[in-house]
Image (cartoon, rainbow, N blue to C red):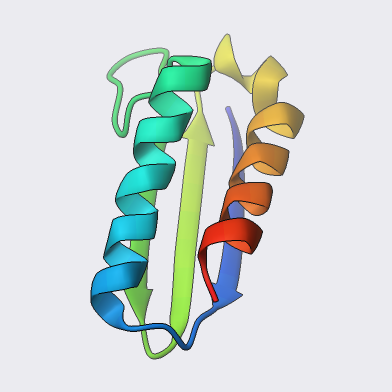
Length: 84
């Protein structure tokens, strides 16, 4: 099972960070079929934000692990664009 974690500091209001996190989850589902939590051979995404840091952890099932580089790049790009 593959996994990755991305963290990014933020200074924007917490409600805007929450909105960005929800947008990321929607974007990943729409573009890649990734849901916030799958069972079995699935993707698990955990997002939290506290103390000025957003933390995104993704665990990929065996079949989904081949998409790790694409998903990691997409998450990083989204955070860089939407979280300040």
